[in-house]
Image 1 (cartoon, rainbow, N blue to C red):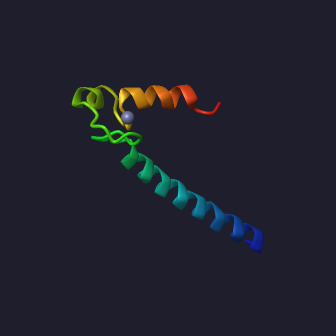
Image 2: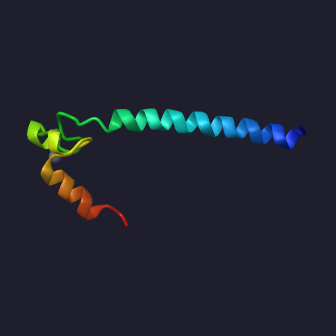
Image 3: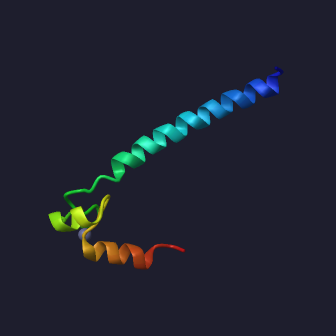
Length: 70
Ligand SMILES: [Zn+2]
């Protein structure tokens, strides 16, 4: 195994670690929030239940979806 192989293997390991960390973070982020991340209004329990990982109230979600850059 030469240096390039070794570097590549280290790189792959780093990427795997980063991906794992990212997945863990994403997983935590997909839990529904009790309050909207934009306006901080409480999100109704029914909405949180209906939409797993919901982070915004209905109004903010509409704005977010409408104005999201393409
Ligand atoms: Zn909101």
